[in-house]
Image 1: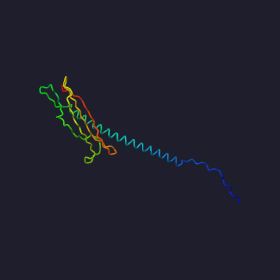
Image 2: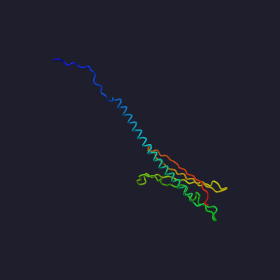
Image 3: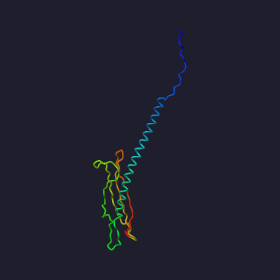
Image 4: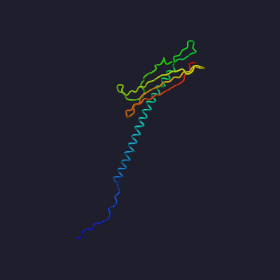
Length: 160
């Protein structure tokens, strides 16, 4: 009986990934997915802040337009000046017009308008500066709350 002679020839090379290569590829994939997710979260937060900022700016402009619409005619037979701080509340609180889901008043963001009307010049022509500051609060995803202020100012001459 003849015994088969063992062959000492090397096995055919099998092409496969090593455990280290798989671990490195997995780590790169995890980092990529995490950075893309973080980018989406940051852009959503920035878009939300931009919506609040635009709503506050619109509220400040609304206050400016109200003051500009007030009658101010010093050359009339009976001079009229309705463009004074006394004719506008010094501080008003309004709801920001931001789309969101609201349940029993929770989720509503309020802003405070502060009016300032000052006489800038009387000679040669009367001129007033109208300034409206809108202060609003924004809560970040981490629960940090910050106050922001939008300021709009304009100059106004009397009605002619």
